[in-house]
Length: 173
Image (cartoon, rainbow, N blue to C red; front, top):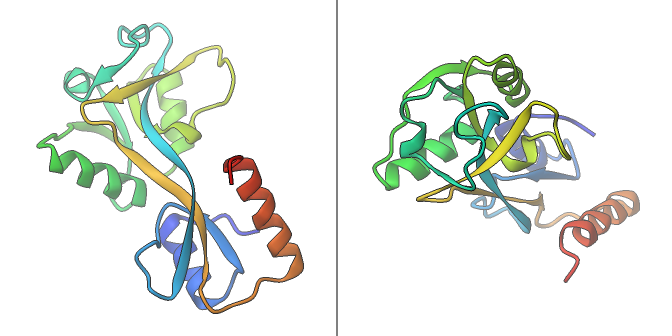
């Protein structure tokens, strides 16, 4: 198991360094198969005592006057987010840029701002300090899936693991 940034994960699959990857990139490479698992929406991460934390849904415009925390612009998550927002003429004034999504959560927890990040990056369950608030107008999501080389047969262990993932994330399949 390798923990890699999205772009490096695609490269590792394409070069045969790993049998398959779990990623939100790579579904445009003709030599790779992309098996969709789930849609992962971007949400607002805020302290529970923040003025937006009690809202059922916020808009991108609601975030304009708050100190915003984002992953660095070289991140695939940031590229996806910026591209989706540009299509609807939205532009966010980022205050902080971090390398890791977990760092953004630490800054939110410390009260330095709010963050936009994928729902799956949020702590699961009831967190004592943090809330995840859906963002709409427009909703921005990333498609999480399994990425594998088209012409390669997986090892029995990798095949079992992949089927377990599909069974977990696509119960109707």
